[in-house]
Image 1 (cartoon, rainbow, N blue to C red):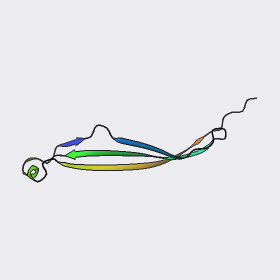
Image 2: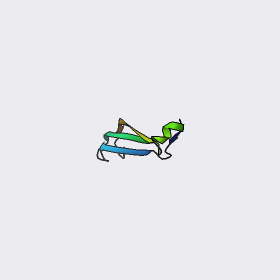
Image 3: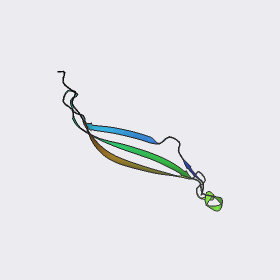
Length: 74
């Protein structure tokens, strides 16, 4: 079957917790990717679905990392 993946996936980054810049600490967030594929059925099946079918998928991945506090001047 002919498949066409949309050229621009939707990317979303969400930061839920950000530490104060003078203290450092853990950052908690998530990245999500959403893609869409257009499936165009060939031959006889096209009569039942002339515009094709859009299939959408989304996947989210949580992340955490630590930001170090700034170094103090001596």
